[in-house]
Length: 313
Image (cartoon, rainbow, N blue to C red; front, side, top):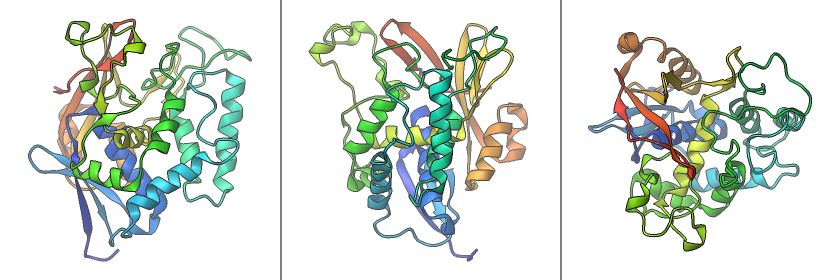
């Protein structure tokens, strides 16, 4: 690898926002898949810290346009390699066939041929709820801990992600990453703490969708955050499905993530994410400078949200 390195500072992605953290990971994954020869790595810098991507040589001048086009082209394939319907939760048979399609898609000449199989590792644990002894044909699978499509008909996560991908362009992606874009009305994934507003602080009734109570946000970040799920696989356990990054305490659930300075590649980062949850006190020996934690909560029947993050201790 050449000694000279090139970096892009992403002023729009902040260390203390769970959605921003996922988006930073998603950008790293996207760049690594599209330009593997550049040995992309990602770290955090500044005060407060924001993300940066480091490459062995400069990214193409139109990298942002190519990244968006590649994602949009992925959706044009039939059958769709990254979606098996509107929601992640589905039947075992349906999920199994979709996962097989994603694995076969790796033989495709598409630039992002590996992305569908990486996403399907994160979508679901493919087991029955806690206490089940075995999978029975036709039963439903458990969605990723990050999915808000588990029985809430209003959150069609896979459908929403597809619409978000089709709605963005290269300029919007680049300006959003630089922190120079303005938020706009679009589909939301509820991974950004700013999306929660108690009913008392809303104009219309939160249950009356016809009144158009919307939150302005950055669609490009939600697209990247979705891709960032590839770093958080779900696995079956005897106590039910578990998703990496989820920390469970009595009556509380958190998403917990590390912040580090020295840029890491995808493989190194996957290892760090796995080990950083085991012992917070020893994280500094792994290069972690801070651990953040955001609570996942259910305020009412209208949805699931993340709280503003706090430093984990």
